[in-house]
Image (cartoon, rainbow over all chains, first blue to last red; front, side, top):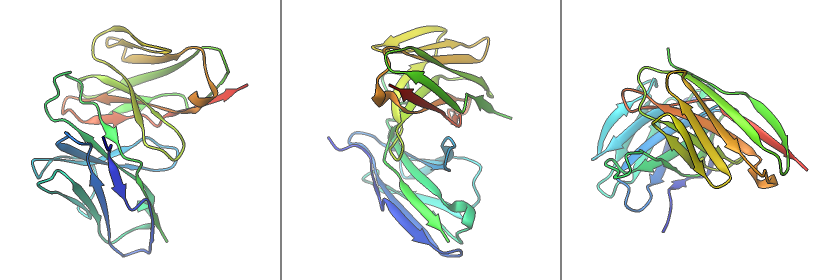
Length: 116
Length: 109
């Protein structure tokens, strides 16, 4: 049973460019959340997708956008890259209506973005 | 504002016990999570507390006091593989996870 898979694992971009990161959720999960994690910091919530719609959004500018496809996979797009966008981008999947009551996230290994 | 505080770094000896504390101030509370993250890897789920008290799961236990805005993660019989960052996260009234910066635990032989 595959867990959460993300691609690419590493990438380097220059300021002003655009990037697309991809995520396939764990089998059976229907919700995808994206996080930004700077070195030595905890994850910062970007947004969450459910039923192909953005359900919640954190404190990130409109340069950050996303999409969820009918197969529950998701993309994170970042436009007009800044040096400060350099970070590990984590995708996490979960089940919207869990019988256990705990919304446990399963994380992918992340995409490490470096902006030069 | 919302805030999660945990120590930046702790050191412990193999075979010993360590307690990692987490204090929080959030708008609402819908549960507290602990995750383990090895360097360069994905965070993995350790425990979930929504009611006051102690939850035990093998060598790991997690405690919650909602009135004090306080939790701790207790690791017993420490092994070298327990060297990792431990992240405390609280689900707020909007069911959004607020994360601490993590505690880097260093295990020495």
